[in-house]
Length: 159
Image (cartoon, rainbow, N blue to C red; front, side, top):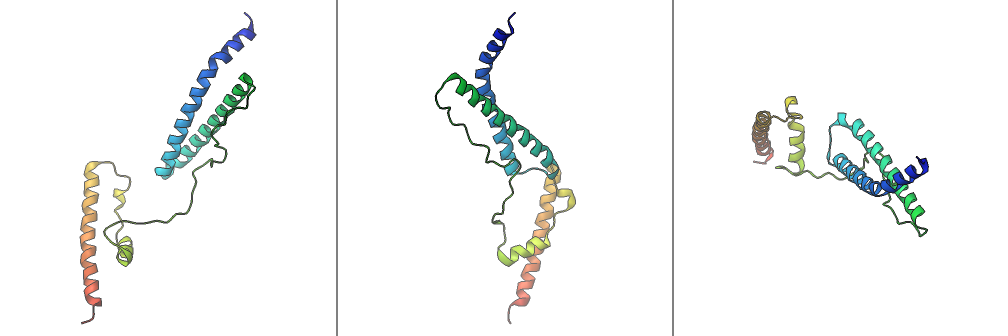
């Protein structure tokens, strides 16, 4: 058996798969980047960063191989590939303006944020009964805060 023929055969069969692999890697990378933008648990960050770095390097290698194959198969100028080299390798942190929407505004909103701290058992809850309990606790705290706020307003009004 001639090893050169086997190698040529492999290269011919790998060409169509290479484009599909690049597309699959790009879809996975975009999904991971979306997850990083939408939110994750703090303990998941190192794993997500490693996955993003691995997928990004595999995708770039795939694009480089695809471009090299394209240049070999035609002497024409190779097609442009999506530019990913300028993308950050980890999650990008940037400053942004935060707007809170809720039942309160201004000074009352600041007072509510200082007043209400959810019970520790309400963080990361996935149980429906626990979620309901946490929602009830928040409603009770809101009602108590409203009463205290009204009392504060009544005391501050001139008579």
